[in-house]
Length: 302
Image 1: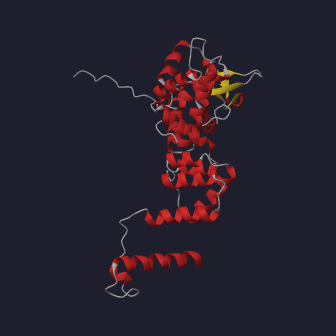
Image 2: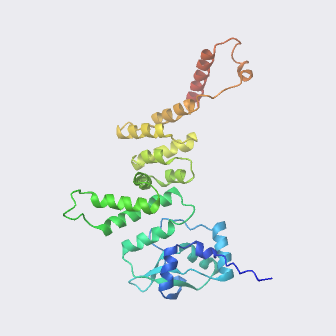
Image 3: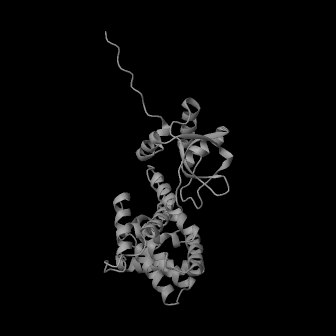
């Protein structure tokens, strides 16, 4: 009976790199560089978590080593800056390895930003805040690399439009969606955390990003005390209050609580639960009026 051919599965390490990285590595020399001589990328927008995926990567490296070297660029002080491979580096630090297989590439600041973002956008799970910060970094770098429009370009914003379109094609998000993500980088960390935790949707988050920091801070206090987050309609109203210099806590509370009452028009209360408070035969409209008045009195007392 003929022997079945051995099927070689890809290592976990290879799953954390792109095809472009693997193609380049075949053409470049790998260097062993001490881990303590490699600095993280400045303002790296992607989180490196010690989670189940990290543990799986650690187990893989322990078993078969680093299969895909990280990419670094040389610094003027003789050290190296990590461009791609932050999770691999972290895993090796946890294992307490002394060196890391690296590909050394000469890159400008903008080239390094573009390469760093591209390698990390391959992740299966990306937080909205990570996507927002990385889109902003990459689009800014692409605009700088593109330079000013040529004399033959009649549109003064033509270069920016081309950068937007290119990033949209690379990322899979539309140009408008990219700018929505970039806009939420103006949120304070507490509001941005709500977006990451899927408690605050992207579109209302965009509206709230136009609030000055002091108004955002007031808003997060009310959100935490009322245990609710603004809907799209609420966010538009809140932004309007801020622009009209009419940003008061009582008005914010009114907006949030009003929408809580009307949020679900099909909300029902069992008649058995209210019979001991409201006489039998009371009309539905009268019952609603009594409940609303009771809630208003409760809220004022609170």
